[in-house]
Amino acid sequence: GYKTTKGSARTFQPIPIMPEITKGVSFDTIAREWRCKWDTKETLAKVQEVLDGVKSELKKVEGLKGVSRTVCGGCLDFKVAVSVAAANFGDFEKAKFGPEEKFIEALKKIEGVSQVETQTFTIMPVEL
Image 1 (cartoon, rainbow, N blue to C red):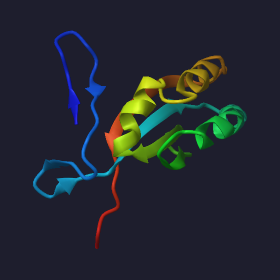
Image 2 (spheres, rainbow, N blue to C red):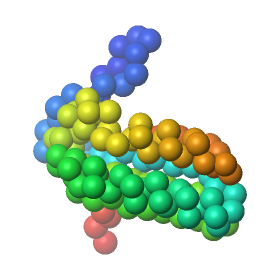
Image 3 (cartoon, one colour):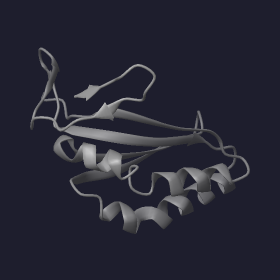
């Protein structure tokens, strides 16, 4: 879980292997998402190049469970979700989410990129 103190951002604390947010909503994976909007296919190609440029750093993230990329051609979204084991998330956060700053700053320099944002969330497969 995380704790919040007045006037501060959330800080993640070490968590059990499978914490439960509420009944039936447990998780063992936390993802950090980096996202933006793009305006043309040329801009999208530049954004992809930025992602390609941080892959080697992402591979070094302790507890890495996966990296996924989501692109919507209709609403012009580009999203990268870096998923780590919940037990490793605190260290990932302390390390400023690996190459996040480098990635975000590079996106902001690309003409045609807007709404550069980040978000943290839990992610789990749904048992069917």
